[in-house]
Length: 425
Image (cartoon, rainbow, N blue to C red):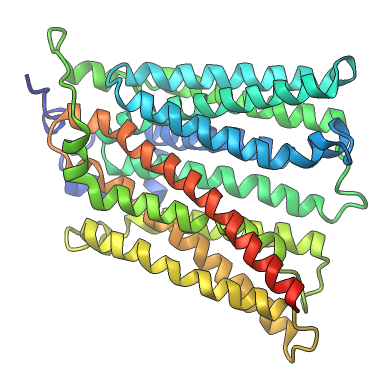
C-alpha cells in the first residue's frame, strides 16, 4: 500500500508549491517557528560531540593527570568508540523503518541523561579509580553517539517529509554547533593558562549541553513537528519496508557525495593542529583554535548559501554534486604543500603564507557545508512516496557515519606522512 503523497498536505499554512518553498531565504527560515525548531535540533545533534571534544583537555589534564596511559589514549579511544558505535547503530536503525518522530525525542532524552552523569563524574571523580572513570566515560561516549544517531535518523526522516528547507535548517544548526565552541576555545586561548579548566566551568559546559537538548524537546513538542507524519499516515496504513537497493538506485550520487565529502574532510583536524603560525601576531596555541573557527565559519556559510537558486535548480544534478565532492580531493595536496612550507625556517613572506593557509581552510570548510547541505536538501526531491522519504533518513546516515569512520582511519595515514617528512627534514 502506498502512503499519501505529501503534496496533498499544505506546508503549514504556506503555499504548497515546492517551488515556492525552495525560494525561502535563510532569513525567512529562521523566523519560522517550525524551521527554527529544526535549526535548534540541528544544533543539538552536534553540540554533544563538540562538548566532549572541547572537554578533552579537561579529561586529559584534570581527570587522567596528563602522564597516565589513560590520558594518552583518551582522544583516540573517544574517536574510535564514537565512530564505530554510531556506524553500527545507524546500520541497525536503517532496517527499522518506523517510529521516526519518537526517535527524535528519545535520542535527546538519552543525551540529557549522559551529560548529567558526566557532570556527576566530574564532580565526584576523586571517589573512583582512573580505570573505572575511563571506562565509564567511554560508555557514555558510546551512548551519546547512539543517541545522536537516533535523533538524526528521526529528524532527517521528518525533514524529508516537510521539504528541503527543513533539511537545510538541520544542516545549518549543525554548523552553528560547530562555530560556537570553536569561538569559545579561541577566546579562551588568550587566557594565561588555557589548559586548566575549573570543575565549575566544565559542569556548566556539560549542563549547557543537557539544556540544549531540553530546549529542543520543548520546541519539538510545542510546534507539534511530529503531527505532520501522523496526518499523512492513515491509521490502517501499513508502512512498506523500502529495500536498500531502492534507496541506492534513487540516491546513489547524493549519498556518495556525502560519503566522499566526510572522508576528505576528516584530514582537516590533522593539518589544523600541525600547520603552525609563521607571520601573524598569534601564538601557536591561539592560531590553532583560530583556524578551527575559520573552518567552521566557512562550513556555516556553505550551508546557508546552499539554497541559492543556481544550486537548487534541477540542472545542478546529483551527478554534478558527486563530481563536486570528488574535486574536493584537490585540497589534500594543497594542505601538504602548506605542511612542507611550514618546515621552512627561511620563508620570504610568512604573513602571506598564514593568510593563504587561512583562506584555504575557509574554502575547505565552505565546500564541506555546501556539498553536505545540497545533498541532504535534494534527497526528498529524488524520492516518490512518504515511506521512501521517511526511511531515507536512516539510509543517508549510514553514509554519514561510514564516511566519518573511514575518514578518521585515513587521517592516521596523513599524520604518518607529515611526521615522516618532518623527521626527514
